[in-house]
Image (tube, rainbow, N blue to C red):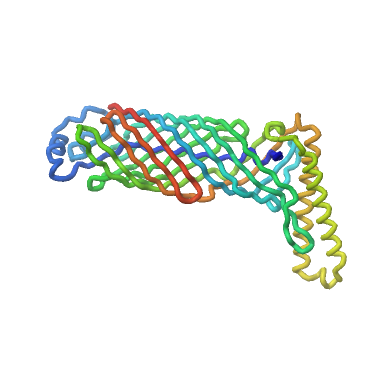
Length: 373
């Protein structure tokens, strides 16, 4: 049975990928000359985008200026964690960064988002983000301490899988440009995800350049676009929060595991003390031996103090709380993207996109309706 130590339950990050899905497309080529000529003489009927009529008459096929879209997004991403501090019942915070090692920490998240947008300028789309998020954080880690020979070993192992729900709000913008029948879009957005167990909403910033081309189909206004691109995510590194002990702790054999961990720490401390006391004064003055002794003593003291306080919190687990502070970051900032959109007409579009390579995998599916303003 796994013992789910509370510190690992709040290691959450989530990033919402949004993209404007439509673009300003320049009409080029002899076979499209009639369409281009019709645009030049057309009176643009909408207030947005600004300069829309002038741009349309120069041969650009503008999308409708406003849109509403619904997107489903999923991702699974590895994360790095450092600078971990934990406290119990609003007491002292214990620095565990030196003695805790994380292995295969990841976050799997999904979201349904609603995105209203407008084309403010012919080359600039701005949008809002409103969404509901579900996230699962998976952590495998252990407490490690050294012995007299500076060989580190695990004295306590823990794993956890914690689920979270939250609300995401944000905004973004997408500058675009038509390039010889294709287009370049530089999507970027900022979002804040509110989780009740966090002191403040988790912040993320997304940058997603895409280069694509549109292929016309037989029916008017119907086309399919394909693109390749990249996805970069930055998340706020500082994470602080407070959670009830009982929400994340599996009490089965927890006390026995803590007792075994304390015994291993005590045994290693005895070995370190015996080694140190067996050295001559000259050997103790050796900087290498001094550093080895100080490192081992410091790590063993941290592990013993933490496990002792954890043991005390177990006695009142039903009324205990856990405070935590850490730094988190995605293991890889970038990954590769491919995507496609089917435009049924200028009002309705369907979109799919996949991200892979590196340590992040993601998928998106969306439906959009556009209209003129």
